[in-house]
Image (tube, rainbow, N blue to C red):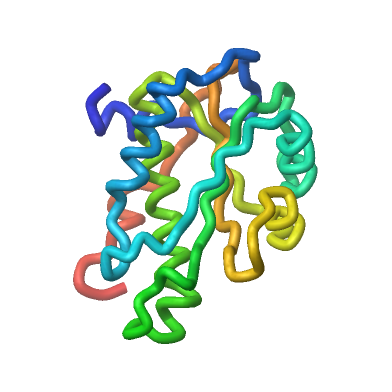
Length: 173
């Protein structure tokens, strides 16, 4: 699938088929995430793939305001790792750049999944401490985004978007 087609086709999915994701597709998704740009090329993020049903149940419970009619059998948790931030970036690197790195990697993974015929749901409202416990991460690892991943059991309609003229400001706000 061509990039611009994947961008237009991507939807947030909340109902998944009971069907495993092939390892070849997962590898391609991880390769795409690994190619994402990052501050100082430090790749200040980690990806935790959760597929154990017990852990997935705990993970879904830690996410606020999200309901699934049929939850995915797989989730990717993108975490900021401030220890990978270059010391020359100082506090900004530890508090922002690694978070941006994780977010960009998640976006690349999301588009790669779409291009491979998979679907995702971006989940960002969760209790960080609960999420950290579920994935067994140390205190310096900050969960940033979760992608539910699999095959869709629904076909949601396109959502309306802002017009480009409303969105883009030239030179000044």
